[in-house]
Image (cartoon, rainbow, N blue to C red):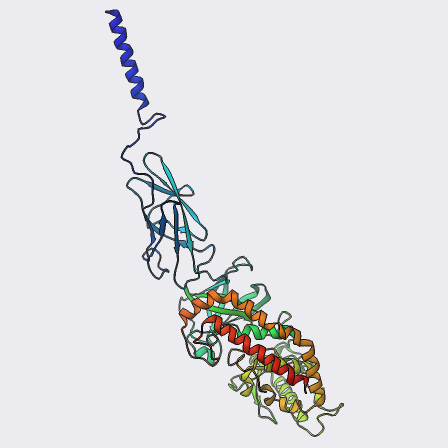
Amino acid sequence: MRRLFMAAMFALATLFVAGCGKDDTGDNPIKDPDAEAPAIERFWFDTRNNPRMPSNLTCRIDDATHAITATVEGSTPLIPGSCTLTPTFTVPEGQTVYVNGARQWSGVSRVDFSHPVTYRVENVNGEVAEYVVTLSFPFTGLPVVSISTASGLPVTSKDAWSKATITIDGVGRYDNISAADIEIAGRGNSTWGYPKKPYKFKFDKRTGVLGMPEHKRWVLLANYIDRTLLRNDVAFHLGQQSGLAWTPHGVFVELVLNGEHRGCYYLCEQIRIDENRLPINEMPPYDEMAAGDDITGGYILELDSYYDEVNKFRSAVRDLPVNVNTPDEDDIGAPQFAYIRDYFNEAEKVLYGDNWLDEATGYKNYIDIESFADIYLISELIYHYEWIHPKSAYFYKDRGGKLCAGPMWDYDWLTFTQESGWHCRNYMWYPRLFEDPAFRAMLKERWRVLYPSFAATGGYISSKSETLKKSAAIDRTMWANSDGPNDDRSMAYDAAVSLMIRRFNSRLEWLNGEINAL
């Protein structure tokens, strides 16, 4: 009997130990034989959770490699660091999803998809599967400028400044700017009438932007009529190779205004007197000047048929429309205005006078002929049609100095369209200047010096266009304008760039022969 009792107790102990081994609180939890393998069944982005996306986006799931991929369509230039979206996904019942250890909820959790993201799925048995989600965005590679007006309203005036904040993502090539205070307004004459608006903005303090030197004032050019988007930039590039005192610099960017992508813009320096811009003496406001202070400079004049500055005059001989750009209307005094008006008119009278070539009293005592030669060569080379009016033709005068040509500005209308034929020599003062053998000799010498850099411009255009291809494609979908003066708005982007290069190179060789034959 005792043996039977001991055997029974041993059997019960064995059953107890075995039972403990199967308890879900032990080292070997109970497995659910019906549990499905961990998996992501569907993965997509719903516009209700991602309002910036133009439509729902379903991702492709490769069951063999666990790769989840999709290309985000649309015009919004999502950029590294800001590709934050809310995915919707389905997994078998009871399975949980994690990213970097954080529990994820379908249609709720937001994730930065600027880089591949690993999703970890676990089932009730503790089995794990990992999926790598890779999204391709329409990121153009350009810096992104985001401006938000304080009112949230669009910018509708060229005269009334709106308070705003600006953020610039330099995409790793330039320093970022985080939420700086600015004021913004519209700008331009004919360009302000286009659907894609140009803008100007100013910081509260001097600020460097995208590698360009510090200043308060900046411009966003829209390049609406230019299929290549390159005309202003290439013209400025030519000016920077010349002997001109200063030519604006710029960087192509994506502009987001009040949360809406507005396309590709050219953020560039505005023409101002400053050590980091046009480096001449700046006069203080007239009411702050002492008696006897020098008023011989600096001035910036703009020959422009819009004739829309407060301080302006028509020239004495050629009846040119001269606007006094600087000092501005609030700072200039009557004696300053009279001085620059009389100086310009006297220079013109002497140029068209009988003794204009006299060494002691002639026109070279009034104007700097090298600057007039350099800006002429560039303008003729690119076929700067605007001289016909004239429009946006700038001159400046430093304290105690002569009248100089420049800075350069406004090159989107009909430039780079003609392969031969004189144009700029027929306008403003150039018909008279071409009568002077010394000026023609100056042109030939400056052409000899500048020709190598001019000849390399085709390569510059080609290289620059490569950086703009993605942006140009998106910009085209936003601003599908087929009209324009440059014969290229209806062309594919590469074709428009090729046409620009071909015409430029043909005109370069035509002008090379003509200048050397002067």
